[in-house]
Length: 146
Image 1 (tube, one colour):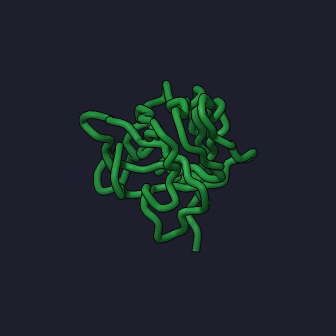
Image 2 (spheres, rainbow, N blue to C red):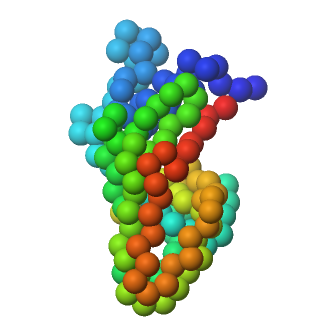
């Protein structure tokens, strides 16, 4: 069983751009949040897996922190069953240590285990050493519902 194309778009729009998914329950449907808030992007050194959290295999170079990306059309572009980032997502520069990040995560918390909503491979992976500023380019973080 799979979702319909319309529901895939509605679900991504609700989650990423805080737009109501209409006609579920009543005419207003599933409503966006009163305050849209942010989703938190994380970097991982391996696939966090289906049962993983935001901290599973998370990068640990010195000064690393997750990046907040606002839930809204200015931050995310939903087209059909795919969503991607409108602008580059820039992480803090490494001030020590090193990591090779191979995956990204999209979750609900700025720190700690957090609920991991989506995960995916980074292509290409990013080798982070002292002074490197990891960045996911605009359109480089693709999420597809199917």
